[in-house]
Length: 407
Image 1 (cartoon, rainbow, N blue to C red):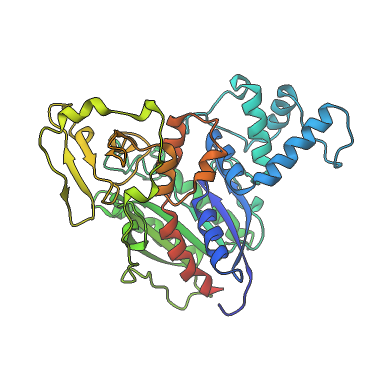
Image 2 (cartoon, rainbow, N blue to C red; image 1 turned 90 degrees about the vertical axis):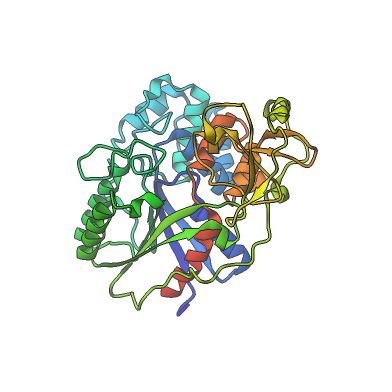
């Protein structure tokens, strides 16, 4: 780096904050590299709450404690918070950008959200500096001097597992929310407050014949804003992950800062890790599938060039993707938020045939056991979904280490 500085990050479609987790890990290795979250844009309630606890836990606890003191009429810090459901709803109604979702797909009626969860959402919005829905975010509201702005928009409408409705402007698909990002950036340009660097991650299908034209159009628009864009496909395994996860990444740099950027695609990290290294010693009975051992019927694990070792269960289901059993001595398949790859099956060290647990799922994405533990009140289905929708932290670490040299 030319000059050491604190990297200011703003995450849209923040999820559980894989970008911030990557910088946390980088900073732990190199104390000279600092980072600061200057805000997020997220509307999925569970993601917002999980994000705040993972990245701002102490502040979350402190605000919660202050609210409890306020309820008891004890001395507080001087900040007056909403203390009950009625007050919270009234405060949120004053914020047009505070449109939230309970399922990550459709707007929620906040009056139907349980009070305890609504309080957590209220606190989470404060500590995570949540600017709310991307559809309501305004360029003039962006924090000043953002170094890295991330916009990994939803993949459902371009994923091979989805309906492939596309990402064209005005198509009203979830993936077309990328055009809201372009609107925000255009407004930020008018305010002379463009972020220095943009980062995007999405599924490989973005580079397919069906969607590449729209992606090229988006890059041309970014060019008119003043960015040079570099994109590539990276497999998480090549960056030290236990998970085979091929994704498209794009880095856009303001031209006045850009001296040429290269992804270290050839810089493959030694990776002898396998699923067995992240397994819990003991799991709850709900994850066990030992009755399916009879469906192995003499099949043997076969190691593929990808590093994945698997076999097919026989006479189990006509959904072939559900028949796959993975060896813990190999890599994991790509984790997803739903479908068969949100239910990865293994035979563990105790010879139990079972699903991977949420704790194991999150570790395969680069998060920690502690990150799951502080969110243990969430359902397993929610924990799987949050992890499956996230980004490989190991890949982000590698990319960010290259990006910081720009500043």
